Length: 385
Image (tube, rainbow, N blue to C red; front, side, top):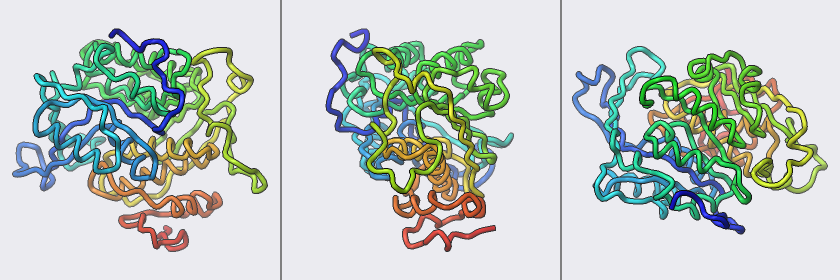
């Protein structure tokens, strides 16, 4: 099988988001210091796409993770752990020859010079994913298909797969793409920059960090990034502590009027250009929404980008306006930033909705620290600076 056959897409979806990518067993240090000096490690899981699936499932959505793992104990651990979050793992494939990928990391922030990561993923089961061996019916069975640039970097076959999945075709679900530029994964040359730009321009909803756009494409500033990636209906430029800038066509930028009834049409999940003529909204100019980040007492700066994507997707599935989508992204990221690992229980939906509904001044005064997601904490009880 060289690609999805005609009619592969399922008309009546039962899944909200399908996430495709490599998940690995990660070994977390028992204490700070160089990898050479850490005496022992605890076992966890790591993977951008499976992180998103786990966060969405924990938030009450129907999420599935599709990947490829080895027929080994580490593969068992991944499938069981991801499934324990409520994620559907029935489409995960087991490779009888290639192993499950693993990696070790230090306790320091990956943005610092002292952060170390030792990957053992070359030749992994996931790197063998290709257009010939993935379950297209399962991949196209959701309302959203979430992908990232990490998969494209794993092998030529993985890159071919992402090109297949982002190709415009009737019945394709909305394609969400997180650029996730990881220079150390690419196989030399400048292919990463052009490939990531190509894939981003073929997607419908794109997440990209301002810093990674500068590193990969030499582009500085949110407006310049939008000029380079004009096709997606929604482009989210993450700006670290400065917040996020969202460029969107055909979506409400602010809160829903109090007299508005019902959910937004298809929760904003139409896919202009995936088949047939583009509608008026697809040709309309952008609305630009800037949403400040929260003040967060950071415990570990790992997994925040995946959590932001999950929060934004969760609010998108609910048909919320653009500002609220970004605020939910910030809150989901804050939940992860205030715990040691990549995953945590998100705030209860009504708790998050109360915080999202705060006026701009109150939102700007919030300061979130460890334990803030507790369901019994009202907005006024969250610590402010």
